[in-house]
Length: 408
Picture (tube, rainbow, N blue to C red):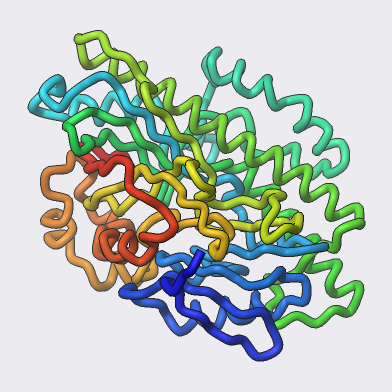
């Protein structure tokens, strides 16, 4: 397909970078980080950068890195399988109560969220005593987890069962949204929680140790990798696959509990999941591109193969989009995973006032305190510009605007 929508960047000593970033800002440090990844000898053809691209740890958030014969654990990161789920209900806007605070409180009660640390106290973001539905969900993954722990005992003492069906902190959220026809959707964003973090951290450190042992010098230590054919490669692929399955199930379990909470507040009977999408945006998988089998690492990017549905959320005051992939080969069938940050968390806390945050989240039932300033809309790129930059990667199926937002 003739395509001039990306910007082509030559990298001395590496593969090129193709960037879908017209009309959106890209930080110099993100350019440098992309170039370092492009110089890795096993990267296939080119690196693709999505319009929400910004600096990350190890690999740039909003990058697609195809590889042959090796995998970079830090390019996937520690929130393995992080992604989105959205489900359309049969409810309409007029079926919701005028005051939405009750719905927000019901969701907050149904799904553990946030994090608290105290001596002898349970973290409020985990289950104290997991309910039967959570135990049943975990049981479908438990045997494979035991096998991982037999090989790597350090993974056993982690937040696994107690984090199933929980939200977490940071940019993770649960929202009630209205689409362009005033239909009610539930949308949420989370990943593999504590156990995924432990798996990611463990294998990132293991890869760094391997590099030191083999005296391999890297442009960035976070680009440490496992060559295919080694035990550590096979172990990582097995562990990351399990964590991705945990993340998808975590989202489905939360969705079930959120819908049940809504039924406790809204008397009118309704159907849920009339349309449902559940997609990762931090993960690695085997795919075929340009006639070759490769490992594709999407760090803050969504699969957008032709006809595949995905979710691109805006910030907590902006619109979000259910999209259908156009199957653009040059992007390795990928699109952005959101708006992308323009301010770090600390920068947002310094630069954005509470009054500005309150104004930017007008009309949304959400937290309006200093504790969520790092997630305020101004910390992100304008989602409309991000969508315009990737018009040849996806088509918009539904436009959503949140009316309730629960943050960790």
